[in-house]
Structure formats: C-alpha cells, structure tokens
Image (cartoon, rainbow, N blue to C red; front, side, top):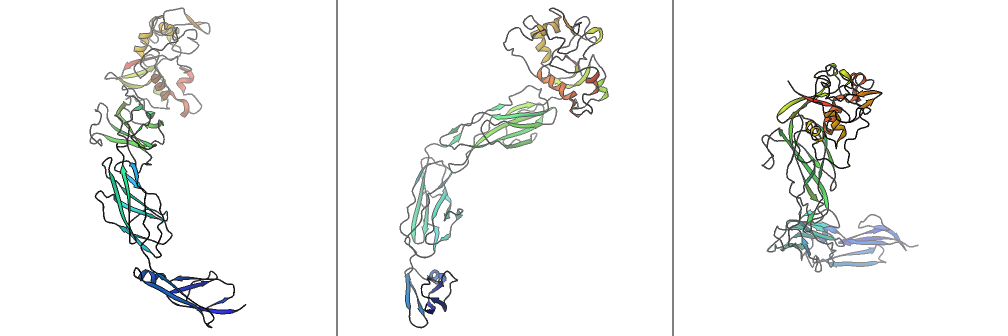
Length: 468
C-alpha cells in the first residue's frame, strides 16, 4: 500500500472513493478511485468553443494527468415527430426526445416564430412539469414540447425552439372536422304537469355520443334554476333576473342517475344537463346544454311525519291529508276512514280482495299525478275494471269483509254523506304516506291510524274539497 496526496489545479476538482469534491490535498492509496469533474461555474462562464482544463497530480511528483474539454452548447439536430388529427383549438404535445452532442448546460428558449405559431408554448425537461420558456437543461436530460393550436381545421401549427444553439421545431396539424359531443336529452325527469311533490327526483341524461374524434366521456354536469310558478323557461344565458340558481354538480358516468332534493312547495324548476369528454385529445370538449325541462312542485301544505290532533278529527267525511293545486284551484285532500256511518267501507284489502283492477293484462294510458284520481276512476268505472266499477257505480256482486257486506263508499247516500270518493293515483297515495308517515311518531302509528284509518294497501279512498 502506497499513500499519496492528490492535488487539483486549474478548472477541475475531484472526489476520492465517492467522498466530497475538492481541490485537495486528499489522501489516496493504491487501488482507490478518484472522480474528476470540471468546475460548473467555470464551464458556464466559458464561451462556445473555449478550452477548459486542469491538472490532477500527486504531491510527491509520482503522478500527473491533464484533463481538458472544448465547450460545446450546440446539440446535434433534434427531431420532434409531427402530430396530426389534433382537435382545433386544443393543446398538442410532442413525444419525448433526448438531445445529444453537447457537453454543458444549455438554455431552451423560444425560436423564431413560424407563420402559424402555437401559443402558450412550454417544455418538459426530464419528464418534469411543463414550464414556460426560457429554461435550462443538462447533458443526458430529455425534452418534450407542447403548445396550443389555433381554431382553424386542417391547418399546421408550429412551435419553434432554440435548444442551446440548435433550432428545433415541433408541428401539429388540426383535424379536418371539429370534435364535438352531441347535445344530450334529459330523460329524467320529463316535462311534468303541476303535481310534483317535494322530495327527491332522479336527473338523468341520455347516452353520451362523441363526434369527430372527441374523447371518451369525462363527466356530465346538471344545472338547475328556480323561479315563481308560472314563469316561462329561461331564454338568456346564464339565466338571471327572476331566475335563481338552485343547484349544479357533476355526474361521473354516462346515463348516471343523480338524485336531487326539492324542498320548496309551489315553485317552478328548470333542469338541464351537458356532457364533457376526458380531455384526452388535448383539451376538454363540452356538449351544448340539453333543452330545459320544467317541473313544478305542488302547493299542498300537509306536514310530513306529523299527526296533529286537528288532522285526527274527521272533517268533510274523513281525515285531512293536505292541499294541492289543480286546474288553477286549490283543493283539500280527504282520506276516508276505514268504516264509515251505515257500514260503508272506506278501505282495506280485505274489503275488495275478490275484485280485480282489470280483467285483461293490458295497460291504461291514464294520469298518475295528484288530481288525476277522479278522472281515472270515471274512465275505468266499467265492466272491464271490476274494482273501479264496484266502488264508483256499486256494480257487481257484493263483497264481504269478515262476514259483513262491504258497502261501496259512493252508494246509499255515500260514506259520510259524500258520493265523490275515488281510488287514488300513485302520487296521491304517496301524499297520504307523507301526511301519515309513522316514522317520527313515538310508539308506532299515529293516533288516527291506530284507531280509525289504518292504511294497509293501495285500497284507499279519497275525495277532494275546495280549500277555504
């Protein structure tokens, strides 16, 4: 083992066995490596073509080597492959290239613009984030370019750079047609009559359809405004004045159902939806909004989940459910008691278990909203609909319940003295449920349901009374 001390002079320093760089003296023994480098500040300050040198020697004169370099900041020619079919007005990005043929830090700057130069030109060095020009890079690092094209179709746009002293160009040609997304249609909810109950509804658009090279779906967005009932659909963009934004938000997939809560009675709501692609073509593409769909909430004022003592008292032949608007008038909805004066049956599955709604397995095109019940019953009070015929016209064989003949509500003077009882629609039944929902009543069903009017099936009878 021979011990020596190394010393660097000139424009170099060195490291012994992976230690820190210095100019020495540093001890070294036979078989130990030393790494030599040129001092960065000297290299950066030198001009193109300048010779930079230094000597590494042993202090006893037994070893001496000269190191030198000629500064070169002119990389070999750089070729960025052109891209085509880019959506007009989008961001184009080159493939990654690693420049060679240079040995010092170089600047990457904007070159002489072409006739149709991209805007917002940026570069990524060594797979880092894209940054604005100018920037720097070192030998061995990679480079990528991106820029925004113009809005003209079938047109080539360029991004010109100076990479050190070498000019480089990246070009992108826009597609022959403009990528787009087909205007969606709102499939839920549909345009409604004035009978929507407050609560939740599902907002859903139709199938996402990309056009002219737009990317796959990224998301959809719904938009909801509200105004006083009777206000026309918005015609300005964005809606303003009498229209108030009620809500908006994203979907995550095509045909997703988004549940929206409506809490205000007697209001008009305007709903629309639009789609976006995932931006894979360079920028996010949006569809036009769908046409507005309008729904309105009912003005009925029944308290949900409550049973006030006033509601447990029979009025106008039954129990008050709430109020709703129909054809410009406001009506009170009355629920029949289970058994009324004279043995009239207000409801129960047992009472009419032997009667079918209809004799054939076909559908009837009738209303399902609040207020549609009377017209539905009138339309179906015939032999083809035995249950409705028995209730409305007292037609058909008598039906017994527990050995007692069930007297239809509209016969022999009528239940409670009224002969306008009818079988409710789904939404009217749901209104009953909202009024007498037992989930907030301590001990189970509210008093009126425990003692007078238990709801056990769709066999409920209603009548409506002009509200005071």
